[in-house]
Structures are given as C-alpha cells and as structure tokens.
Length: 201
Image 1 (cartoon, helix red, strand yellow):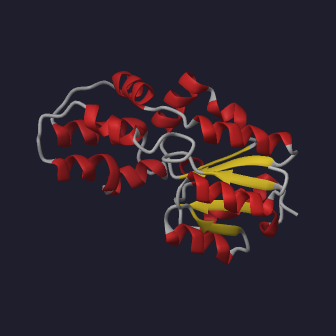
Image 2 (cartoon, rainbow, N blue to C red):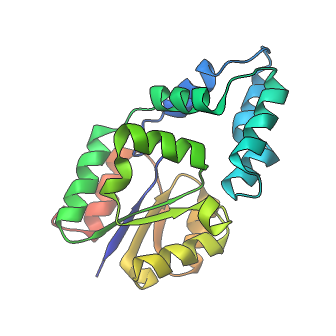
Image 3 (spheres, rainbow, N blue to C red):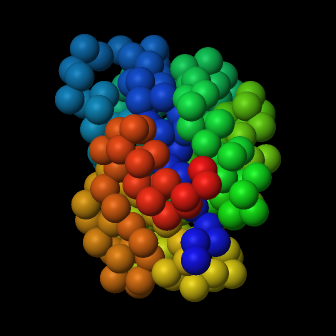
C-alpha cells in the first residue's frame, strides 16, 4: 500500500524553464555561458550551498565575484521569485494525492534562498506534508542519507513511498533502500506511473 508520494520541484512542480529564466535574467558582466552555467548550476560551491557547507552569503559572494556583479541577496531573491512559475497540472495532482489521504512529500537538492523566495510567492510548502531539503540534512541526492531522511520523516516503510527523479543515479540510490523509484520522463509518463500505484488518482 502506498502511503506517500514524493514530488520533484525544479522541472516538475515548477516549470522546466523557470531556472533557465533565472539564469538568463541574472545580472552578469560576462558573455561566457559556460562560466554562468558553472557558477549557478555545476560548481562545487552551489553543491556546498545545497549541503549548507557554505552559507547563503558565502555562496552569493562567490557568485558575485565570479560574474562581476554587486547584486544583493534581496535582489537575487526577487529575481528567483519573478523567474519561477508553477505547473498547474502538477499542483492539481499534488492536491488530489493529498485528498486520497496519501502523504505528499518533497525531497530536493536545493538552497535556502530559492526555497524561501518561492515560498513567499507561492506558499507551495503548504501543499506538502513532508519536506526534505538537502541543506537541512547536509546531504544531496544521490547520497542515501537524504532518502533515509525521507523514510524517517514520512514515517513510512520504504515500499510505501513512491519517488521519481530525472537522474538515474538518484533513482538507483532510492531503490537501494527499497523505495518505489522510477525515472521521470515527463508529466504524462509520471502520471501514468503514479496511477499504477494509486488507482483512484
């Protein structure tokens, strides 16, 4: 019996182009797209901010130094909020899942600036019973530690949890703990898979 469903945030609950919009609109004094992508998406520093090894100030100071800008943390928060939109189809499924008496969960590699900015705008955390943030457990997917936190905080057995992710390594890690995990391949596929677990959705 499924008692909890885990939803991804970037590219699922929030539209696929939201973060791309943020990167495109972020002030920068460089045209080096590889550098921009590295600093905002792929650097060790962004990973460390998601694990709270770096504080918000430390990470954004790094960004400012690399991209040659003086944009304040407050301005960055506003830019994040302005760049993001929810996917109404996913929001609807989250609410329907909850109405079935199934716990709704998020398990996300994320950083406080983004979560706080989007919560202020959308109040999206109100839709989720269980909220696992990498910066709170000091581990990012695919580290099994973050999935163990999901199991513990949902108060469910692993085989009572459904989890989808667009990265195979994350799915394999979740499966290794016994979670019903599968690759996210678009909303329609996700909904079909979800309905195979929750027949009345």
